[in-house]
Image (cartoon, rainbow over all chains, first blue to last red; front, side, top):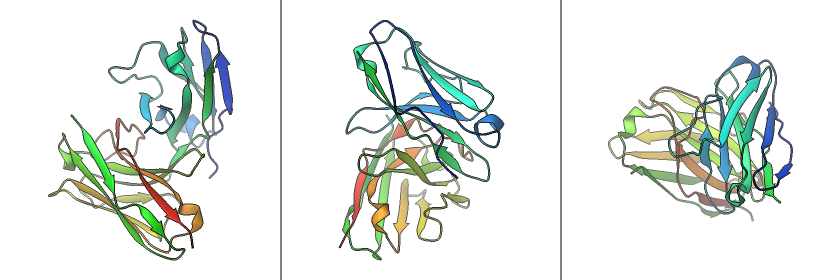
Length: 110
Length: 122
């Protein structure tokens, strides 16, 4: 099974909003509400930002939000800040006892 | 505070074996599923394997099934990954990650180790 599809890059200016998409199929993202999003800084372990499509772990700013429509999940970062610059990965339970990650999106704050 | 500390990485020849460990602390280890996620140099994240809290149920990515074996010792709060018949494409940083509950494959990994590097090369 191929990785979930993410744009390789995204960008925005400080204060703006940016949305990163994660596209799958009706058998994975479309079939389950188990999409998570991770932020990874260079040389560091990933950090959970959103889980089960829309839920935010404690400590994650409410500038980060998740949603899903059909076979596409999205991560929106509002009020962009310089510290938001990182790689972002989506992941989902995809059935048949498997988990898939997206290819990752490099977010640049201009 | 949850802590996960991986060890056991290193340089191994193609076809060789390696055993990774992940020592956990700060939570009731047996109450949580645990997973291994890897990242090849300059590449994205890849789910490798998960194991439920009791240790009986294990799950693998197709790319590693039959060669990598996940296990756990709940008495020692330690997760393992036995890696056999290693290939160059297994070269990656291997992270252990704590799951959301005892018997769940949901990828809600709220705690990660720092990772251990495995290099498969002759």
